[in-house]
Length: 314
Length: 317
Image (cartoon, each protein chain N blue to C red):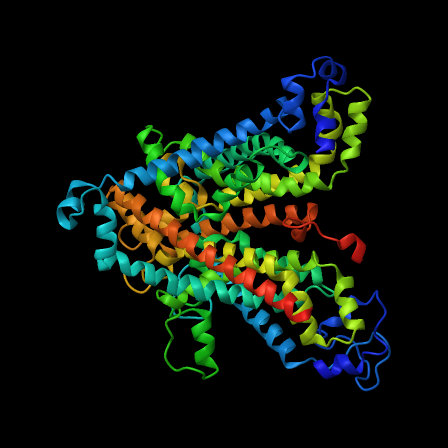
């Protein structure tokens, strides 16, 4: 507070002579420099808050066709969403993809981040290689998967050659195609976050545990994991967001009308193909709600885990 | 693994050896694994180590396979049921260039990316400065407001946003593409710049201000030079994100305002089974090469791990 007040009193002499409202505001951290926040706030409100509230309002103005088919007055969009199994099943289809992929990406990146933390030759190169797929983007990954893992691709060709399989296996245009594409784009991201959180942990803490005679597993469970928990929670959330909003790959390497008919595809179908903006917004808002529920669950889990570990150590 | 560390325990307690905690990577040197001196590691890697490296290998095989097959495909003349195409040529590139008007698409992509960078840096850096340095009422709420667009899946706010854009008659225009891309970019700049500004010692600014520099002079003469590396890093990341942003751009762009990713997607999903696979591949290669150059340049300026949290690397090494 005192530093803030110090900084706030920029025209030192002027502020002293009028130790008035302006001065008192400055003491609470309000002065003209806060104007620097205005442009950012403007954009946030104009491009995020306003469209979002508008979208929520839109969900209560269902199109006549939806109203006629499903009833429910202003809630017709929601009634339609939960009653129309074609729409509602997409929730389950999305979760079936996003949850396992997010969990896998986070769990797999922990040991890799550990390995790449130690010093060895080529560490920087390896790190760069792991991070590289972030730039590939879903579209290129999809195209590559279609060619590489397709029926006549190198992967099938190789597996047949070494005699593991005798018929080409369908790796793409189904559930697994999307899983592969999500792992390729999501794992580097999870790795990047986890390794940055890992390097934020003071190594001397672990060294201390080692001096006290803790073995590898104890050190991981009792020292590293609790310290990593906040980072793990954030990583899980962000990885889940990535996998949950899967859209291009579900269309390109998935089975868009079958096992990978995810929510974002349905939302886009309503938006771009049917021009039913209220319904599209409804699906989008419900996606956001599910997202929030998952985030809340992760945060609750993180708080229990953190307390448990430190308590056990005490 | 447990036994190996425990047996090495009594000696390996030098405080500056935190690297010994995890098992060693696969054999790199040629030492005897029997009697280990202080700080030395077992050379027989544990099953978990092998598991991790096997997983990594599988990941890289997929990665390289994907990349190489797209490149080979983009140069292959006919390629159906064989290991390699029958003949190679660069004609797919020239075809793609003329058929899709790639020159125009690339210009659009660059205009969008650069405009987004300039606006989000101009808007985001001052906000990041305030968030890093000051306390003020509602700070937590405002921080959360800036965080939300990054936490939400783009399509969640993208669809209402696109609806608003169409209502304002901005649909399919370049303006709309730029505006929607600003939504995640500004928070992103704020999120990257806040920890960066926190690192800068505030006494430098205090000293400048005590010497009579005005707020503007402090900004231009003191802060700007210190902020340049951070701004550069943030700009490159925004560039990567904007060029790669599919969902938001796709929702509002039209034929004249498609960026490269969206153009590739449209080519892949065009009615009638999409364009020839090789055309798409050559476009994808152009896209990837652009992105790789950006990333390699970016990694020369910044360490990937310094983005999210402040790293104590300097102390470690």
